[in-house]
Amino acid sequence: MLISACSGADAGELFEDYLWQNRLALVFSPRADNGQLLRQREILAEAAEGLKDREIVNWEFVYLDSVNVDGKQKVHLSTNPFYDEYDVAYRDFTFILIGKDGEVKMRENKPVEAEKLFEIIDAMPMRQREMRGSE
Image 1 (tube, helix red, strand yellow):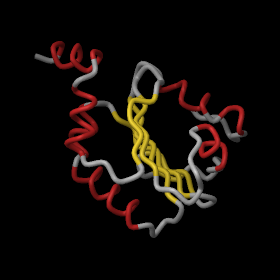
Image 2 (image 1 turned 90 degrees about the vertical axis):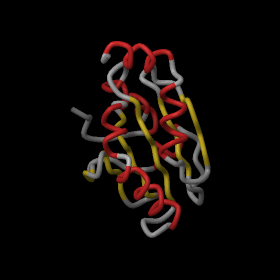
Image 3 (image 1 turned 30 degrees about the vertical axis):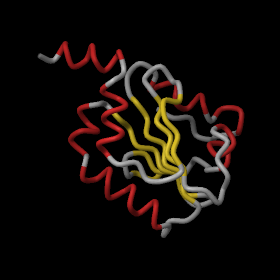
């Protein structure tokens, strides 16, 4: 369970529950009606099965507005600590992929196509082991 408040010092700590369990897609947007955000939502929605297979949890941050986790709003969380933690400018659209090890694996300032996201993940050693284990 996530903690009830989020200060700048503990934004990264919120993701500790996901370590070694899930990959995180972090999507930052300056506004809820931002075209790049709307496109990224569309891409991720169309790729839902692939996201599930790769154990990706989608976090979305709309500056000073909302934090959503897999489409569910987390009203007790503020966007600012996450922008600070990942050094995202409030005017920018940013997509960040966090691996199961908690490290940033990709950072883009434009929507990321599912094929590119899956290609990066599928090349990771941990994902290679996962795929071999499911054969």
